[in-house]
Amino acid sequence: MLVSAKECRVHALECVRLARNSASPQERKTFAELARIWLNLASIFEPAQLKQRIGHEPERRNAS
Image (tube, helix red, strand yellow):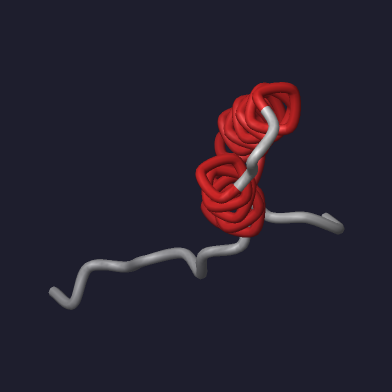
């Protein structure tokens, strides 16, 4: 996968920072919307990445 859920959250935080530091109301609105999009992508990627990790875990056997 090219982008992870964690990376999406990092991008979202950066957009929030940019929105807070923007002078223009339109820029603030645009960066806030981008942050929401990044968070939405993170929520989409997260289940797929969890499933991928579970699928690659080695089989556990009882020690008995």
